[in-house]
Image (cartoon, rainbow, N blue to C red):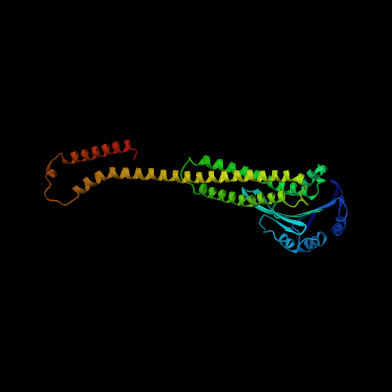
Length: 323
């Protein structure tokens, strides 16, 4: 279902009121005025209407209608089309959504697809800073990007806590395939999160170097701050992935050590049992001439010899750590 969250005009950093969809093109002609429009999962007719009102490129509209885009920044004439991946943590799983942004000299349109937090708080924050909002859509663009990036932080922190819990279980108990499965799943989710953050570095770099008609020079420091946040989160994710790989190797090594201990124990008891097996199998052979069979103490001596041999072998193997 198509939803227009809000359509508001700003002049010199102050909110001047709502704007009807059909009146947007006329409002854009007003001096020192820009439109901030928020949409949630719009259908194609509404997007076509936006294309008409804002003079957007057809290819950008086509991309915005599909929620399967990679993070990117594309320039279409006087406007920019930016795709950001949003992330939410649900049941310890990362669910991804998308935020598409159309940005021009006097407008910004945000299109949300899939799981994502509403942008109402972003708008309210910007309206509390009219001096910065006076810079135009560039400041709203920064606020939206910063909002998306800030939502990566709790997810990375949660993954770090999960890794600590997994590390605490490494030296306890026996091999558990569920622990290994959890490790692989966590590593896969970390890689997924890294892949959606990495392109933001290049996007921020382009906004800092180019598009001065949209991003004023005074705003470049703000996009540099977003870029630093992204770089820090990527660094943390990379560290977690390395630690997780090391934890998996340690876990597998501990499993191998435990298996070796079991094999050694079985081999030790096998050696102990080999002695009576040899003795009893010898006397189980059908030989006619075995002089000791006629000796009345042969049986207790044989049992005693076997028992003493087993005890000595057990003592030797126990000292060696095999039993």
